[in-house]
Amino acid sequence: MTSAASPQLLIGSSVKMHLTAGEVRAWLEGCRAAFAGAAGADVFLLPPFVCLPMAAELLRDTGIAYGTQNMHWEDRGAYTGEVSPVMLVEFGATFVEIGHAERRRHFGETDATVNLKVRAALRHGLRPILCIGEGERDVAAADAVLREQLLRALDAVAEAELEGVVVAYEPVWAIGQAAAAEPAYVHDRHLAIRDELRRTYGEVGGLPRLIYGGSVSPANARQLVTHPEVQGLFVGRAALQPASFLRIVEEAVAAR
Ligand code: PGA
Image (cartoon, rainbow, N blue to C red; front, top):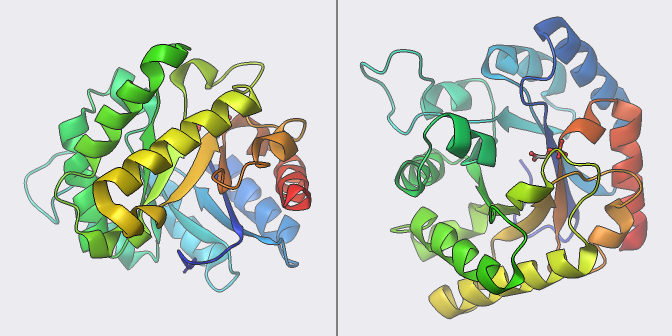
């Protein structure tokens, strides 16, 4: 499992629903080969639920962490179509993405359900990748939106659990675009998120890892991580080719 205290960059990818199961297998194998050497970063991969057994088979003991793109907050029960944190743990998952903008937009995810899921993940020893992001590029309003999402998502999370939390800052307007948010804008938002965490939790507010997502590519990875509070990257389309994903990691690691 990735150490929260690791000074290495944390760089991961969700394949969303971009690939078929067969293509996910090839992707996992490609990533396994690409990151076989010392990558210099902590890498995690998030396939769809049905490919979790595949990830367990292909990634166990490789040093590449894996998890899923969502989960339910209850351990078991009459929740047709849902997947519980217990199952994720059974398959060796260590990360779970929670509250991605697409889940909020298309599937009714709210700050309240995000909070239930974050707490359930931590209860099961999973590291939640809590996604927050403002809808529009609005410097004046962005930090207030982020603050609200952050504090609601972390409501009732114990200080001792903060170390396991990953906050993915993903401006909604920069997801799935031709370009990422500008590095200076990203750096300012990460600083504001960190300030908010410290204001709320004191010193332990320094523990959650902050990573950036939204149109990350080999061309912008280096610039994005030049600020110390950008502690990793969360990649979508540009990680679908393992070679491109590896370049992103190499670029980011070179910047540190
Ligand atoms: P993208 O997706 O890299 O394809 O923009 C990023 C994300 O949604 O996390």
